Length: 164
Image (tube, rainbow, N blue to C red; front, side):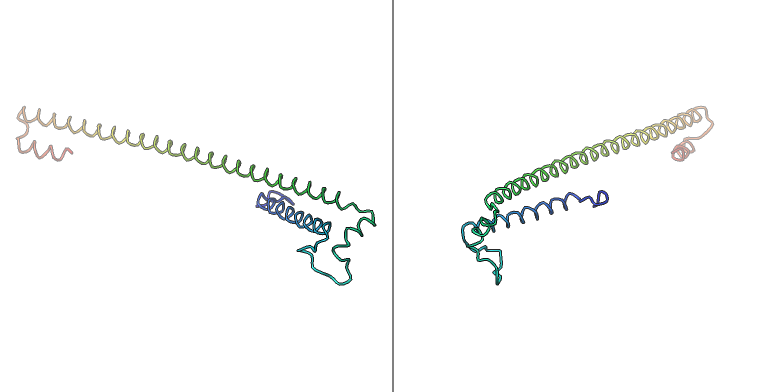
């Protein structure tokens, strides 16, 4: 996911930092092995190149301080590791915040749905109560009509079932 022109995503940035740390680690390993006079495990042997044991002597003759360079690489390496650690912590904190927000939103949605369900249930109960009250009113009027002699008992019973 690109955040803008030339900007790296969080994953791309971490991958770049990890590659940088690996490259620094390899350089440190080469310098350490050259200082010790050992062959570098990663450097291929090339014809016409200075033998590994003589690299340190050649650098000293040329005025290159390999120890200072090694210390600089180590500082860069540990700074890169610290940056990776900080980026991973930020990423984790962001993910936890997003999960918490998502949980809060889900809880809020459940509350809204529950409120709507209660409102619908209340309306349904109100409608049922109103219908029941109207039915009882019809039945009362039919009984009054029967008592007044306007309808027979059989007719009243038939009309009560139709009143539903």
